[in-house]
Image (cartoon, rainbow, N blue to C red; front, side):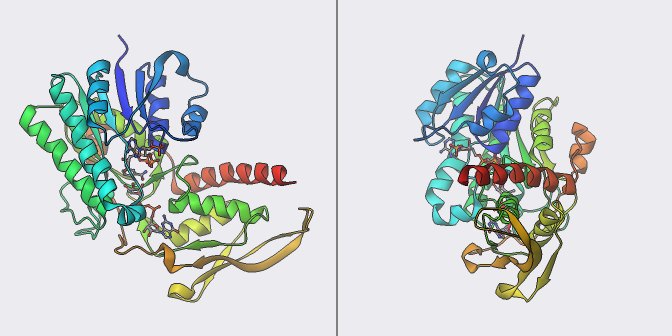
Amino acid sequence: MNKTAFITGVTGQDGAYLTRLLLSKGYVVHGLMRRASQFNTARLFELCADLPIGERLTLHYGDSTDSLNISSLIEDIRPDEVYNLAAQSHVSVSFEMPLYTSDVDALGALRVLEAVRCAALAQKTRVYQASTSELFGKVCEIPQTETTPFHPRSPYAVAKLFAYWMTINYRESYKMFASNGILFNHESPYRGETFVTRKITLAAARIMHGLQDKILLGNLSAKRDWGHARDFVEAMHLILQQDEPGDFIIATGEQHSVREFAELAFRAVGVGVRWEGEGVNEVGIARVPIFSPAGAVKGEEERVVVAVSPQFFRPSEVETLLGNPQKSKNLLGWEPKTSFPKLVEEMMMYDMRLASEEKEKSK
Ligand code: NAP
Ligand code: F7E
């Protein structure tokens, strides 16, 4: 019998990679999708293009803020596994929309847990909650492990802390198989365009095609433990295949700054970046192509390609995150497969193709 999974946030970066993984393992997949004025399934369908989506993937309209909708879907689908990935996932935006973020990210997780319980599925359905390294926030120790105390630094992180503890509470109260994956940052060519990694690779590719002048960024010194989403969704699946539920850090054990990410993005297309100045006056300078009005390369010039804009600073910042994935290695047998340079290169090559297509269209 094929297993059945229900994925909330199926149209997001992780939802698309997880759907690909589960379909390739023979699962029947149901996904919760928001109604939008335009199609929001592009990355899902692109990533799963070679898989039997017509036969084994069903998309349902819904929203994490709609309790009845979540409950009736779970009651009808009766899934073996639920992956609760839906979230207002942008930390910076959560400062502008703290109430909405809490409704979706905190109460949304509770709605899923309660729907499973109320449908009398507590002993059948396993629940994965998308927890986050943002819980560690102002870090109490380096590297962070499953026992490091939390200090959330944004409405997003506080909402996710509620969801983290609710997941544990349902496990302890109702003996549900409910687990947290505490995932550190993971990226890919399908990452949302306003997260810093994708913002950099998209802009660097457009600069190399003469479509953009420079990239404006916030805190260049912030450090993250960046892995590849394709590797990280494998850990989500493994977490629900264990004999016992639990909470697992998923990370690479390596950290890099935003500045280093920008350097590597340009290096992937053969361009070196040197840094001058400090704080808001810091700039990244590089030798990049110059183009004629008709779009042909007419030479090279050295100029500013990265600058700092305070508009991208946050009211409170998470300066450094570094995970220790030892527990996951020991119990799940999980290890990241993609190195940091390979991740940046893959994102950069994808966005170079997008920029080239954009340039062709503009001719
Ligand atoms: P993402 O690309 O932003 O995807 C979020 C998904 O949630 C999208 O499908 C989005 O729908 C959906 N969504 C947003 N609000 C919703 C609502 N009110 N009702 C139903 N669906 C809603 O995020 P991601 O990077 O794939 O991350 C997946 C999950 O892991 C999130 O919970 C995130 O907080 C968490 N996480 C991410 C990372 C990371 O580094 N990527 C690390 C740790 C934890 P639309 O497509 O319509 O916008
Ligand atoms: O920022 C700095 C920014 O927005 C990373 C989400 O998936 O991972 C993600 O949250 C760092 C921060 O991701 C810009 O200040 C500098 O220090 O790419 P980000 P995030 O905030 O770490 C966690 C694990 C999640 O759970 C979240 O859902 O980069 N930064 N300049 C910038 N960030 C952005 N977005 N834009 C800038 O221009």
